[in-house]
Amino acid sequence: MTGVDKRVRLGRFAERGSYEFTTIAAILDEAMLCHVGVSAEDGTVVLPTIHARIGRYVYVHGSPVAKWMRALRSVPLCLTATIVDGIVLARSAFNHSLNYRSAVVIGTADHVDDVAERRAALEALVEYICPGRWNDTRQPTASEIEATGVLRVNLDVASAKVRTGPPVEFAGDRDAPHWAGVIPLALHRGRPLRDPPARDAGELPPYLDRVRSCANLCLPEYG
Ligand SMILES: Cc1cc2nc3c(=O)[nH]c(=O)nc-3n(C[C@H](O)[C@H](O)[C@H](O)COP(=O)(O)OP(=O)(O)OC[C@H]3O[C@@H](n4cnc5c(N)ncnc54)[C@H](O)[C@@H]3O)c2cc1C
Image (cartoon, rainbow, N blue to C red; front, side, top):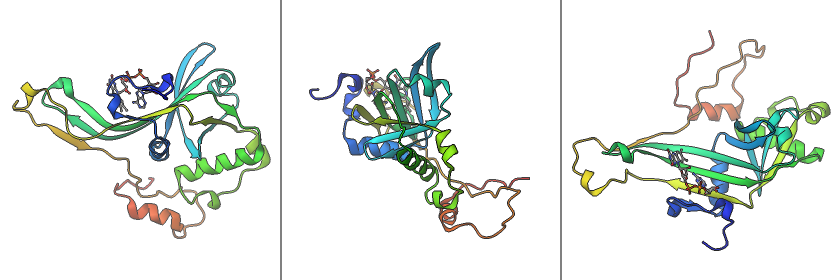
């Protein structure tokens, strides 16, 4: 395929791939976490972390002394985000699969030194895990912002891959006497559980009330 950076050119099932910014951005925006892969001084690590996208950049944060954060000063990274949508049960063991949407971003990370951008990234990260939350927090002090490493990766070299639909069977397996189909999977927010030491026993704030109204998991209260 012309025009696609060879680092993100899909090989297998290339028809499931996309290089469209909107597709990649939508996956990054929905995936709850990403994994960052980097070659550190004593080996390669792939670590899970929270991310947030602002425009054509994805931000991650962490302790500036974390090995992966330090490693990313000088070497390329690969950031992946995955949403699993279903378990695909084929008649043959061979053709079992998952339905998914995944994004891969390849590049180098910029350490964000600008305080305003770093603060905006931290706000995006908090809002990402809980929309509406930033304005209901004690805001970070200058020293807390200083103590947080923030990395920015642009989305210029990125790919998406999406599998949907039923199992793909070999012709000879279609009449085999085994149940086949898809078990849908989704990540849901549960009912908010109050931190026991909380002094204010008032109502849930409206942004959490919205979470509660969508929750379909019944989790126990803390003992
Ligand atoms: C939840 C999940 C489970 C999977 N399970 C398996 C499995 O068990 N076995 C298996 O072989 N494959 C599995 N895959 C697919 C796997 O991610 C690769 O796409 C595939 O193994 C190899 O593709 P390739 O040869 O094109 O990759 P490569 O040639 O190694 O990759 C080239 C480039 O293609 C792009 N690319 C490749 N895969 C993806 C992707 N998934 N999403 C976005 N961009 C991608 C990247 O930019 C990458 O740099 C799974 C994917 C997901 C999301």
